[in-house]
Length: 91
Picture 1: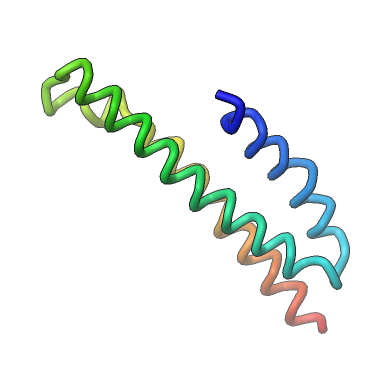
Picture 2: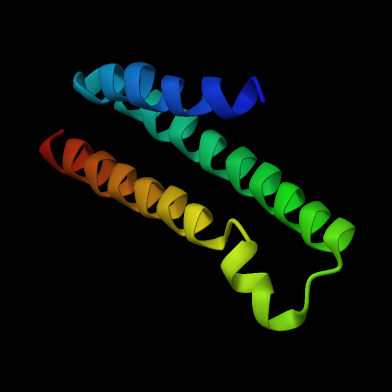
């Protein structure tokens, strides 16, 4: 529960601050990637454990899963990748 609060807060505050400066953009990109990977693993684990414990039918797996949230996290990663590429192109 604590990580589901800390990761988005770190992403919004720290990663955004690091992307504001060209010389810290690489750290922002690295931190953003780590947050997305950890978030994907944690959300997938939570989703799978909930589906297995409730014995949901296959047609409800997608609706009850965290797959849309994982997609949003990866969208955030690709936006960070675009920002990083823009910073490196200016350099």
